Amino acid sequence: MTGIELFEKMEVIEDQYIDESLSEDITFGKKKKHSWIWIATSVAAAFVLAFVGVVNAFPGVAVAMNDVVGLKELVQLVTVDESMKACLENEYAQYIGEEQIMKDGHYSKVYYVVADKTHISIFYKTDVPYKGAEYHHFANVFCDDESPIVSIWSANSYETDIKDLYELRITFLDELKEDMLPESIQMVIDFGKTWEDGYPTEEGGFIQQPEATATYEIQLDNVFFVEPIVYDIQEEIKLDGQRILFEKIEVYPTMTRLYYSEDSNNIYELMDIDVILKDDKGNEYEKMQESDMYIEDETGVIGTAIGFASSYFDENVSLQLEIRGVSWDYGTSPEQDVSYETKSVGGLPEEIELLGMELDEDKTLTIQFRVFSNDDLGYFYELYNVETGDYAETISMEKDTEEGYWIHVESIPYFKEGEYVFRWGKQETKKLDKPIQLQVK
Image (cartoon, rainbow, N blue to C red; front, side, top):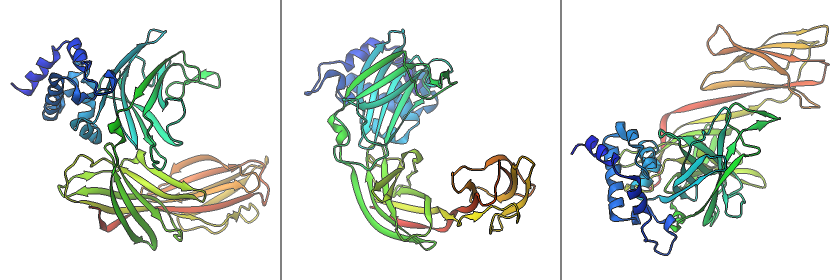
């Protein structure tokens, strides 16, 4: 039988058979609705594994299988997200299978949860769009007592390739604490219009007064509390006279996190690191920008964690970090007086040129600059009232005839000598001629 023929056979399976197989009385001390997909009936388990294999072999027709109830989420997991794909292939997912009809007639259903101490993904379906011009939904997650799970997180719903199926991704941006993940969570889906100052916005945003709400109580399985695989690094590198300490790597099922910190004596601020994680099989685990985490104490940011795709389920002999580049913020110049009398804003680098100043009869000062900026090197400036903190208004920004330069026009109403100051700064992204290799495992 070909892969496509198997897909056709799977399409005729009645929804009730899958639902019945997932509700068999196999609880192992847990509620039925929280049984893991690999402890369902042998028929359902074999069916899931066969499906995963076929989707891997024929990814182009995976979306055509979205009529198979209970397996819709698997299509998205297998074909898109590599970390989620690994979780699914290793049976690291919890089936929920609960649905609700709201008082306004709208429908929602929660299918699967995948979680660890860094991240929660909930796959759910609703007939209300996430970004509807008029009526839409907004989903979030809390502890069972309605308190936040952690103090800082990001929570966003994403459309999948399956009609009406969404993934709610919650990423924890705080330093990981012991017992951070609660044993049960509450998922809330609000339905209604978004209002801002009394007017509905076109799309997105928070629903101020939901017209209907669906609440799901989800008891997390103990397997989600798995401890990470930890590799201690403790290696310092020096770039452009600045010191960066790579401390450790923690590998979770849904994400790998690299912890590093900057030397307190560094002059430049590290904005970003171009770094990848590789294993001995040639796999590269790329950065997940939305998963960066900042570690703070009373003095401010003392460390950072970068998120990578997970290597948790991979059988590798070695892991290696490869640092390919850095992005620096070189700081700003001292405050310099803005003077119409002398037609100056203080000392400027070659990449910022003062083209002219004009003061009209209403005492509005117009200043024109020529500023260099591209993908790797950028100059910026601030023009503000030293007493009030009010910034000058940017009237226009247009490309100059010379590559990389822009013409900026700023306006200061009711200008007076001595009230406004100017300072400039520089940011740069630098690729390393020879990448730096750090052995992790």
